Amino acid sequence: MSKFIFGGYIALGGAYTLLHRGHVNMDIIYNRFSSRRKAIIDVMTAAFFYLFSGVFFWETLKVSWEAIWSGEKVGTGAGFDPQIWPIFVTICFGAFMILLQGTVGFIRNLKIAIKGGK
Image (tube, rainbow, N blue to C red):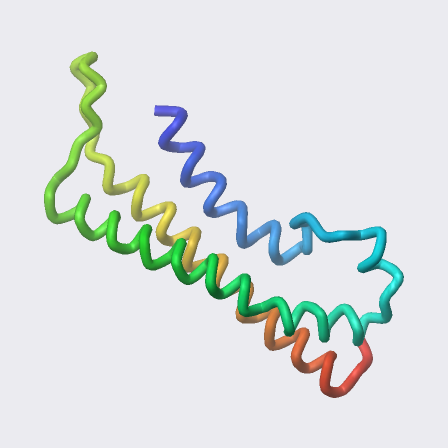
């Protein structure tokens, strides 16, 4: 059961980490740039973010939908066979939250790249 909970935990934590800019950057180079240049770089690399996050959300949405309608269960063989859809839906929600937080960050960075400032 801990494996299933951990999957949802990671997906939900991704948006929180994105909010606090906790994901890995090339800090040696990136920290030397002005806030405007950082924003420009972030806007230019947003396509990679949307490609990954969009596919992640779409695939988890499909898997969640199939699990809900099929009533798929975890076959543990130990007599405890819970349905899997709550975990899949949690991961899908986490993927959506990552997309949402990334969009907010993109808009913020676009504003900084155009107008400057912080």
